[in-house]
Image 1 (tube, rainbow, N blue to C red):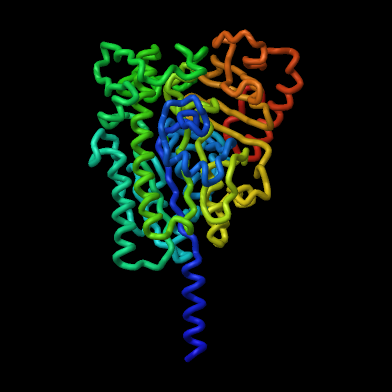
Image 2 (image 1 turned 180 degrees about the horizontal axis):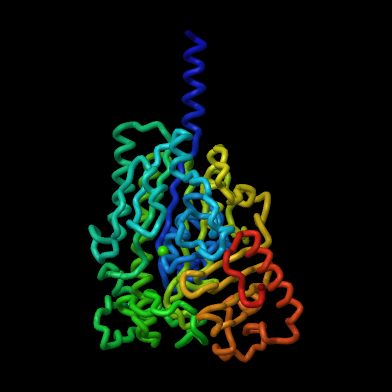
Length: 476
Ligand SMILES: [Ca+2]
């Protein structure tokens, strides 16, 4: 009898010790919108700032890219499966002329399925669509709806309320299983219909008249530091929705349009922050906060006027990078480079929970970075945009150096960019007209020919390693 009681006590103890997970994901948010990545940003996010202060902020967090204009789909599939860009399941991505890519892949094990098996209660709320349905349906509790309106019922508050209702339910039912909550928002993705009081704070209007420009307002955010009226050459995806038909922006890149749209983006992002605050308060009141790992990120970044672009279909840092913050038991506080991909999330969450990552996972656990044992998990980062004409865009980063290649529109646009991100973190081009000779792209500069060749070789290695089906013009 005594042994049984002891066993029961030990089991309960082991049970109680399992950590919870709150994974928060915004839709379409550049890290440079946030003060923690851009101190000059007027966007107020006190709750995200508090997470950053109590946890670890990643300066080198990236999504690997997309083979579709719906960048969200690839990004979210990589998160759910831990697989890389050319491996994630979806037939359309494969180049039909390349037989090598037709090999059937085993269906990957997904984040919710793995956590269900490990005894977690899994819950999600998020927008609908543009994600990986086979993973989404594995969650035990699903509260999905696309909420991009300007009221509590039609906007981000709705997602927050689903999480609060779930936590209240756990409290009244005295649920003992640990939780994994996937707390997704539908904003600041367009249409950016902010709440009236937040729009007013950022001087923005829900602009709907295609034939007029919104009014300038001193309360609007300033133009982005690397704003251009026009990208210097075609990005290679004709008629791409994000670049030509987002309501309120369309093809316009003038100051009034961009500042108004940034104001709308910030109004939506501040509302997300308010909802996060409510959930953190609830976790604290329940006594669960100290036993919960909290991750804050976005599925990808966003241009909104930076480099003359509007959408998420490019590989400049504002769009290739994502915000990434982690807090929780044993997590080091501060900032770190990390060099992580969103697809590393699955392996890392498994590692933190003491679960073996599945065989189909390709991501790397960055727990050693979270605990302060390491500063990075890899040296080289690779990015793709292949949702328009092929091959599309490719990027590779190592240390301070970054190479970007554009090979689009049937070979009529073949462009190369070489940046030193330490000296030129905003990726200024000659079109930005900076006087400092360091603030430009060095691809055409003979003095950087050796570095260019080194980065070109590195890109080829990465493309081959990841089974990229579309070699660039100078790789054949
Ligand atoms: Ca998105």
